[in-house]
Length: 332
Ligand code: SAM
Ligand code: FES
Image (cartoon, rainbow, N blue to C red):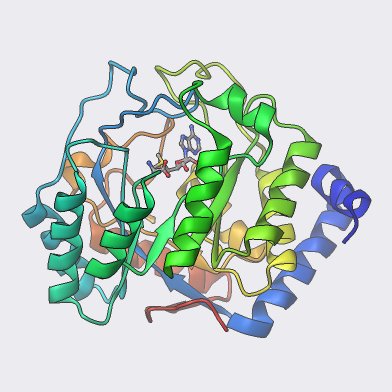
């Protein structure tokens, strides 16, 4: 698609035009994945973070956050529950927590890998050095989620403190790919200072990187952050960005995110109808879920892992999709 065509879909307010886009995205998705929706078990193992991203509820200077870390035993307990519920992918996500040194991450990945030799292990723990990513990979991690957040330099600088750089984040993504990870990039829709042009840059960056996974969700304001009073991202525009990503990267694994479910009661289902093919129900212990508050009013924080698993299955089937508990690597 040309820039002009993409910009039209990024900005359109015409429901028929949007629906045609979603229909095309569904067609492309069905070509590689049919009606299957892959399940990933998400374990949010620390809400400590040394970074201070302006949008993020668990940023270092948000003093209102009660901080927690899961022990290796607790993480393994989440995996035990997840495995019993049929999950074949564990996603270990957290803030950039200095307590979790390379040695500790390697210890965790090694333990999970020992217990589950055939599961996929996904890490989402931010920007690291090449050598660290390599150690985690050798210990058994297969996938890595690191949203680029925005592919525009000036926009990146408006969302992050000067200590963080888009160049380094992009470099991390290319490094991860080179090491052999299945890599996930992505961005929020509706962050302050975002424009149709920066969203276009996001799509062009995805085309360049060709990630196996693309995470897109609406920006939702979080209490205790500089953006707490900003408007949230729009459901419709987020759906259109999912659909465009599906069309540009037909084989990508694209989650219908919790943030999408937070801004609309059927947001995740609509994400699937716009071309997404993954859901990531929570496996974190119920006691800590509310504390991993990246944004306000996050859903599913009061549920047990088994409830989330069943709830998502029901929701998916209602919309004609089929839950798929296999490991679900990207189509080749
Ligand atoms: N520390 C890791 C990293 O930086 O990639 C993983 C954790 S980070 C909290 C996961 C993602 O949450 C970010 O990539 C960002 O896109 C999303 N996020 C953070 N704050 C958000 C907000 N206010 N609304 C929606 N998504 C948000
Ligand atoms: Fe958690 Fe619905 S996905 S309760």
